[in-house]
Length: 590
Image (cartoon, rainbow, N blue to C red; front, side, top):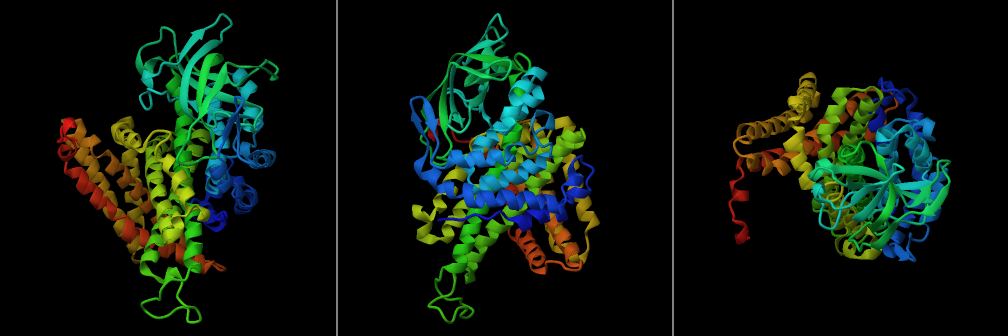
């Protein structure tokens, strides 16, 4: 059976050596010293290791069941959710006025990695609630906030997002769910939504659905969509639960993975709903939730790689197979451990260098969200908007790739369910699809985000990389700066190709968008690794330094720069071939 341990030492390195959060000017960061963040990681990590992770395989094998209109979660989930709730973990970054602890968003990100890695399906019940509460906080009236948020932050009530319909996935303008205004200011919501994660369960007293629908007479397409709060159980003005609303579960979807999470078909039959935000401005409100969800999904991608890597490494250290070609390393045994073999090392180094780079990238992104929200920093807001599709798309693509790479370390045992490795691959696979499939993320990046605010934010990103390279262009950092500079030039060349050709033929940009997203992901991880190498080198100069950890950090970074970052040249070559090879075949010839 797999195991999980929160990577406390690496998390602390990213938070305090790389990002130096306690010295930043973000309100709340001065309190997040190493002792404080260490307490979060250690305490939640213990709960994850001892309570939540042992249920991961239970959830995968049992799944959820629908009984008399109510979804039953796997054995142990409800008790574990009670422990998570009772520990205050669901309200870390929620505003104090609505029952939260008022910590920065970064605290939620730290907790999110631990919970997602230990049990992705379980954590989704809480993660979706956090996103729904964020949308209400950003767009709700004061009365709505007071009514819904305290119990959502405590997870006494959980939340969902309802977008997709059987005939309308990404193209939300095609939706048919309708909202009919009532004389009391409410709406009657009628329609069907599919793929609704955590759509129903037995772990909370109420479920607060955020539902996209069209008010009668609304404009056609996406401009006519509004967002509504539709609770499973109606709530009076004093916050007391009342009658059951016109909301029901049609069925639970049979899925490839995340079996412990109830993915439901939801039926709305004249259900009472409350407008959230303005009429016909539902997508603006929903994107508050979706953008947060996309960052959380990117985190899920590398978190599944983290737990898969932990177990693959343990197996490679323990499993005896063959002899080291350079000389016997285990003379008292019949064979040497797997880890002596270069191809196993390559596989593990691919995983390790990705996970640690992805963690730094995601935590850095969380600091930008805090700067945007707590300091109203427009530059930080613009930069995280640019990088959100990269975090979601690149980290989930690679997260799945390296979850399967970890499975490969086990050989045939990796394909046998009792070892648990296939679950990480199956669970990671959904992250490439939901909250906007990764092809859509690439289109968003190239089609919208590059040109946002006149290209200001992508130019700021290039300048950030250029400045770092210029300031650190010494012999000690040469193995990091030179590859980063080359990769950044590849990325800029791709952007120039889009500018020169995209106006004449939009397919010239769109056909290369997926490659561009991966190029930018590599450059972002390259920047993180260069910064981490610098921090590690500085750390080695201090008394009492953990030399083994810091030297391993530098060596892992050198691997990424030498073996992974050069992929930008391949992606640039693909982009510059143009759209003809992609678009040249007639649809009937496929």
